[in-house]
Length: 406
Image 1 (cartoon, rainbow, N blue to C red):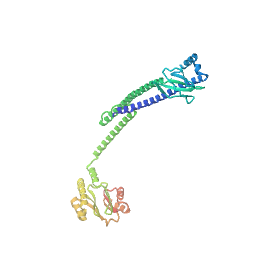
Image 2: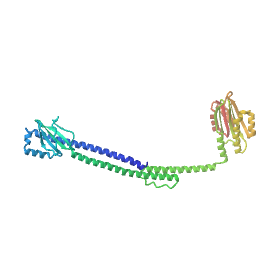
Image 3: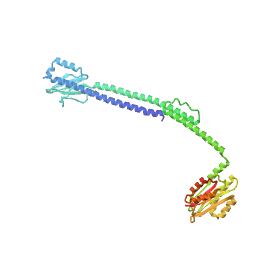
Image 4: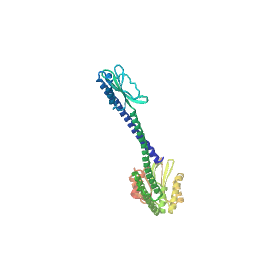
């Protein structure tokens, strides 16, 4: 759905609901108040007339006087909506004090209290309120009030409420349309900004954004673009520097590091740690040869040009890992010297039945003597820890390995 449809679908029903609820409350409250007013008016007429008649010894005879009857009718004309006023005496005789405009026969049932008002009645399509009040000496007065004016005013009010609900819907439509249009404009501006950032095109003007969140988003996008440009610029500079620093020696060192990762393992009852340290010769190699219950660690250097020496070292390592235990140590070492131009060979072999009793150093470095002394001073340290400490203290160039009991 579009943002405009979402806002309109949410705003219009909400405003219509609010207007309808307020209109309903107004309608029912007004109806209740007007109904109470009619009841009070009907009771006032009935009670006032009953009190007036209670002062007479014979109300029927007294009201037979034309002057009194005319005065009573003239007084009741001041009561809005009065549509009939009757006296029902103690004998049950009905006397019309004010004749109704429409035919009406009042109920002769004696009221249960001194004065009471009955429910809304419908007689011949006309709604009325009837009130009764007792007369001293017997009998009671019945007054009927026309309720049609009340409902006419309520109908007018209902029409105004319906018009208000319709106006609320129209206002909601206009307001929602306006808000949705503004939001759509802000989103379009943000989308154009993101598209320009993505394509590298000139950035559009976002100064006309009026929604704070949209302005914040535009500022954040500009900041992200600035950071991206700075990162790309830094990356270009770093790549250019790496291109300038890249040499055959650096490439060979990287390749050798990947081909001869450090060893930290447990095999055949011994802990083994080995690594290339510092600026080791290109042909430096070490190999951990393992078979069932037996193991050997071999280290050496292959002579030749740097690139060829590294290739020979990798081949020598692979040969040892596959064939060391198929031959005698002397035969394997002779093959290394003859086929791989290996020199400075060192090796140490052990088995699960005869593991090394103490840490043993296997090194091709200049400071081998100092390294050996350190190994003897820390016999309980793990081989990997010993290798790390020797590398940190002596900073040797070459191969450094330690084999100790597991």
